Length: 247
Image (tube, rainbow, N blue to C red; front, side, top):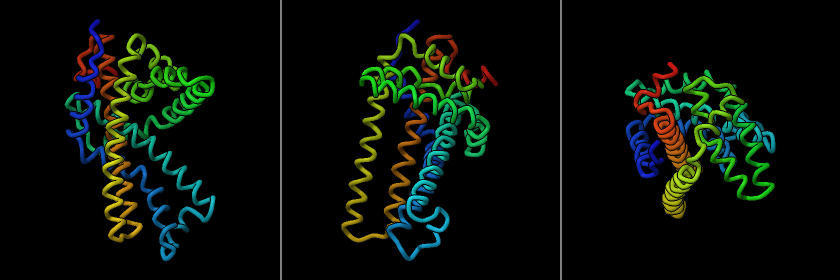
């Protein structure tokens, strides 16, 4: 088996992102729309009708965060699905992407909850186990969406796929984190420049949506690229045929 190519995987992630830029970023933005609207409404007392949708006080905070978390899982799954399908030359339109994500949402939610518990326990014990568990479970969502695995089977499948390649996956994720960090920094600078000149809370919410959409789009594309790389290395399946394997 060949080595895991960090540079090639990052290149694939950028290729997938820019090849589906509009769809990926739009879906990523929609995931954070509830939270952005709530934040803008809190800063604009005249728009109390928006707060009425979520509720006031802690109820509003909780409902907006819950909606954002739910939509984020849908968006993340949709982007992963769209990235893998796009790499295989299939339609990656928003409808097909969201359809694939919604169909697997219960399994994605269950697996994500189990992953979170495992990772939190790892970080609570020591920092290193938390990092190791994060890398071991890195491709859990793609195995659910593309292979039809159940929550527990998806965790096992991710552990199996990442075995022997966890260091390169870790460094790939570190570089990915730096990319999203730079995106956040750029958007913060733009936001500060606009705020200095005076702006509406809804403009600030729009900038927050763009930043969140870009970060979610790139993160989903990166996870898909890692999954494609691992499948090709371990099973010899060309990454442009992986979407057909479990069709």
